Image (tube, rainbow, N blue to C red):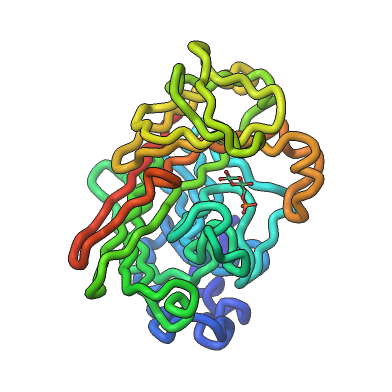
Length: 325
Ligand SMILES: O=P(O)(O)OC[C@H]1O[C@@H](O)[C@H](O)[C@@H](O)[C@@H]1O
């Protein structure tokens, strides 16, 4: 049974002001978080590693979202199986990414060109985001809105002024809307990704359609450009494909779980399909050696040749809508 929110927020590790030394001075206090709650439906609680997370339990679905990275770590429509894969070996620490769920990637994708010292996949996934609002609409869809703005720590890594807004709408479907606004005085170029990890029964039995005949950069084979065949993608070895200039919907057919996961998107020109397979899984410290058959990433991105340049005052929106049938 879930403890009452007031007790949860008295948990010593949820004393957010004291705990997150690195965090933005604007980080909300525990009492400010409590004022945002929708009692019985959307409350804050200590999550794994005692990192604070929002727990949503509505008539439509359950979800967990960590303030760390604004990271969606769980989504399960009522009466259905859990949709997102989470590694049993994931770290939950203030300076480390979470392995699984939906890492939010910004402002570069993968290793940063010419900056080997920079963290892979940017800094948004390890930043402490602020939650701005929690609302429930007449249909029971709960929306959490998060924000992250440039500060000294982000400027030390990437010298631009930005405002990021992330809205997570939890209903029968999961709708992720990521907005980047240039609030500085010069243009900047960025990459982004909604790096969704999906749970599957056995990745070798899945078929992913929507990218037939598309070109991709093969990150497992010296970045060679290749063309996908006319059939859905079958995973038969390490797979790390960057499909540039594609806006299509992908459907992950998982006969083992008797379901199809659909990823519909807008504002995204790149789709990445990733499974580490045996050797890469063994090499990843925060991923179980035997977990690779249980997941597939289908990522909604703007990356590589599709990096975006935003003029001052402009906003870009990347959206993924995830549904299960
Ligand atoms: O281990 P990380 O930094 O979370 O990255 C996981 C994978 O993320 C994918 O998006 C990349 O295409 C892969 O190359 C990468 O290995």
